Image 1 (cartoon, one colour):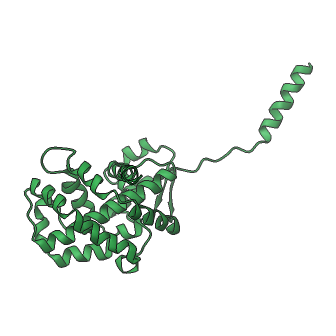
Image 2 (cartoon, helix red, strand yellow):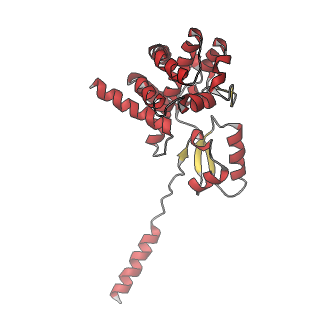
Amino acid sequence: MMLLSFTSLLQAEITLIPEKKTPLPLVSATELDPLTTSDIHKRYPKGFRIFTNNITPLLRKKLNRLTTTDYQVQYVQPDGNELRKITLSVVQNDGFSHFLVKVLGEKPGCSPFLSQEMTEYGTRKHGRPLIKKISKLPSLTTKDLLSLIQDHHWWINVGYENYQNTPEVVTSWLHQAGYDNAKLINAGLKDCSVTLSKAQLDEFSQLTALSYLNNAVRGLFYSKQGSSITHYRTVAVESLNKSNSKNQ
């Protein structure tokens, strides 16, 4: 009887301990973009949290479809201060060259980084890409490319509103990183049978550097949250480690 009483008491004590609520996983729009509604539901059966920015019209439709049921989608705002700290850290530990060598050499021929990532996301303006194929890249004028850099949604991803509101230490890095890696980027474009003028290449190289910055910053940010990260964000974060090893 004594044992039964003790067991009952123990169970009573256990029921008094409140159950800890695990927050829904923080998921990036970039990860969800290519998935179907069914894929999203299978990957995150209990729902997820997502930042309100960078949601494409197509993804918005998928999310609206999901939320017509009891499925949970929580819209949250990123911590701008944390993003800016990470951005400065990435600039100081620049691994852009390592990143390019890796992504441009992953497959023979035209790199998917250029034909998909830089086309689908790099040329995106007002939620839609300006071109659908990398072969159309020469049709974008220097002015078009400059406009993309100035107001790209990637700036919000790294903690700033746009190019104009970004500190000089970051914009100076962008110019220098683009200049230093223009030959490498040009070689990658040639593998895609794409030829740009020098002025176009200058701007596109900076846009590519901005893509790297976005991938590295968001990769580190989501990793700190315990969230999964996309392929190019993984490569970008790994490039920082290589850069640190080289500097030591």
